[in-house]
Image (cartoon, rainbow, N blue to C red; front, side):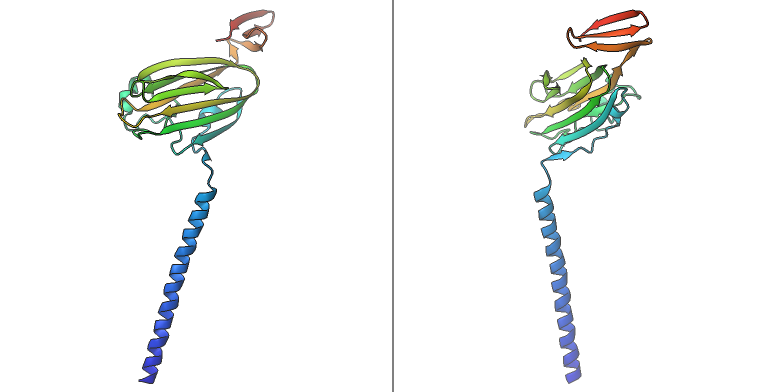
Length: 224
């Protein structure tokens, strides 16, 4: 009987230590999670692919930063709601789209910073399909903001970029009520031009012109 009692007490003691060990491990894990959350910056490095920009001639050192919880994403023609804007794209279309689909009272904002090695003509198509006046798409390039657009609207953006650092901010802001259309903003078919039929581009900042030169010939284009 004594041996049985001692064995039982030893078993109870072992069980107690095992329980305490499990609780201690869970508590340590909880504290680790809390510390991680405390040190995560509100401005997170993007998960968005940089491939769309890295493939452009004359553009290097691309970094993408997401502001908030809804980063811009690589264009996905099979995503929910995309059938409402399918006529604007081809199977070859590449670009980015906002990431807060059907998320009321949120903003999807991404900042793309990049370096231009030589003067280029930078262009892309942009599209929004949203609730008119209330869910708004804004494009800002080097601090110059394009007026917010909403509803269903598609256009093309063109601008000459000089050598050096540049910043492009894409923002799709939703209000707290209705979702309309594809409920997204897009940029796609991005292009850079440094030559036109063999003519090399030279940018003149004094009169905002881009001159394409070949031998003794030249074609001059004003700033767009």
